[in-house]
Image 1 (cartoon, rainbow, N blue to C red):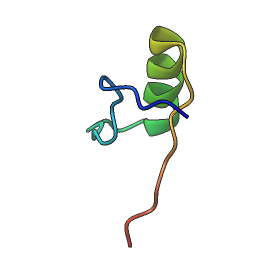
Image 2 (spheres, helix red, strand yellow):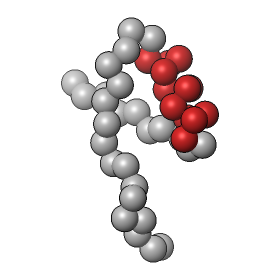
Image 3 (cartoon, rainbow, N blue to C red):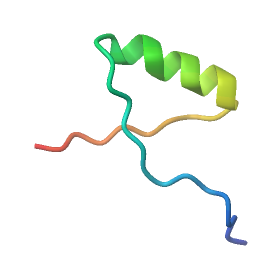
Image 4 (spheres, helix red, strand yellow):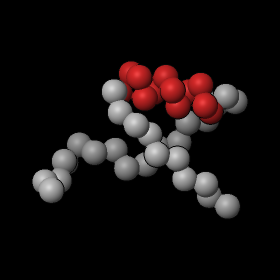
Length: 39
């Protein structure tokens, strides 16, 4: 697999409706966002 130098590996979305924001960013970026529970 070839590495992509422009891959985003971490960002936070400070919103009250995370599911809605996640769906928006997935649509705008044409990708799937992986969520990780921190705690």
